[in-house]
Length: 411
Image (cartoon, rainbow, N blue to C red; front, side, top):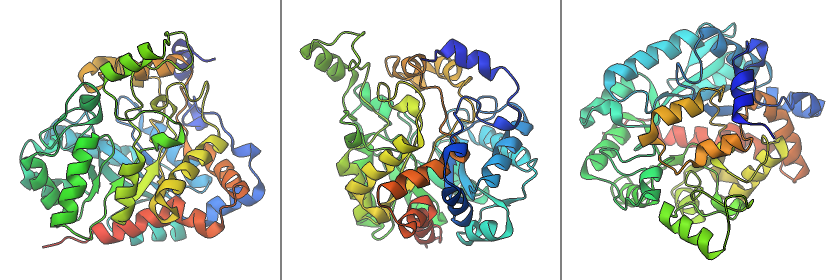
């Protein structure tokens, strides 16, 4: 089983053309038919790779994009706002860094302004880059700054990133006992997002806040869908997504589980969502995109995720939300070597009783890089009985439908 020290040592070497070097490359094991299908379909990814954490050199982003494009990935939703952008100045700086890095790829880049850009990128041999925000901190407490985010191309935005923000509570705040939900400022932000055509994203957000958000949307913005941009379903694995740390500790004690037991947990699987949350979004016409990032799933995989396991995650979501309401999202960090130091340095953002760091130490160091998984996932889903029409929906069609509904600014 890999250890964090090994991952850091390996990651210190040159990445070369391997992009996410911790991720096993499953491409050679896939069928020729699956590889071809990946190139013929619109395949959209989601990744979260901040400068200085996910990449330090523009060439790393270029290599990543070129490999993805070569293997049939049409484009990705790219996170350019998270804990590393606590204000508007930092957001604008990250936007500039990512624009520079992505434009250094050999593959031509199409920066997404409208839904049609995904298909145009696919037809023209380009790679589609869509900007996303996993926080509202760059707004600096001013809802009118949503318009500025929109001007910079932000197409989806989370209300919170793990902790409590001015808009509401996040999942890590929740496991630490915060029961607050959507704030009045959060409602103002939602109104501005709908007005300026930014999709509301519920990932990372506590179930108290997501309930308030969906209730508010259905009352004040009826017919406007929302998404979970990167959230697997807890029921697929029988884990608890909403427990507080004290409740998890109590459950471990009641079951007489010690830290060396394989079923022992340091916290709930807080980044996953309940069936109820998924069904609510499906009823609103939205999409739940499941991620293959292993460190969210402490104890499920002893090593890195396989294409079959990724397919099982997708299938678990489909069984709950339906084929028209599921998407894919690796949440790839490009490299995980800097993730743990970043989490330690931002302990207030990752106050999860050591859950994430422990997952890395157990071996969950891969990033589920889509270029290395997608063909194998196609084979696995075909084996499960999914049709090409189904895959077209899962890989991009469902999300593009939601974007078509939400990206049109509303008065």
